[in-house]
Length: 203
Image (cartoon, rainbow, N blue to C red; front, top):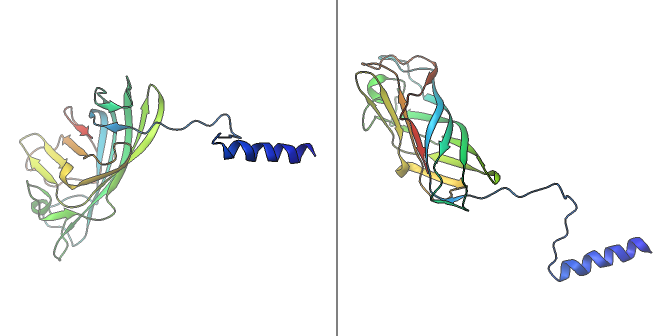
């Protein structure tokens, strides 16, 4: 009888819009919006299988990783601290075939011959003074740039080619790595390359 009365009581509460929770320890993650700019505290790019002058046909991939600290004035809801950790894979393919995205002359430049292709994304896990926030999923498709100087390679994934879901959904994402790869930036070996100061993530 008591069990039946308890069920009836719960049903009545639900009808008047009262939320009944059976997990008092659960808490909703914060969904962030607005915009932020972040600098890489540390980060790496891992080229697979690497970029060479005369490679065989095949796709190139980069595993991207970074730890960021971000500014907060334009973030909603209002937070005082915002940090993130991201990781993912970005794939490149020369279009049209033959596919030599691993070739230096295709990979480098303001408008490389090869392009970012489907399945290229990274996930940013956010933490704030309010607690963990909903992660962002950033997907790229289209162009990028890899501009070489005497001492660096500036690998930039343009906001114009990005889509974001989760936190900061509907915004644009610009990921820019400054890598200590000296001219002529060829070959670029496989393995993690540490990002240099000045690298950033803006959302």
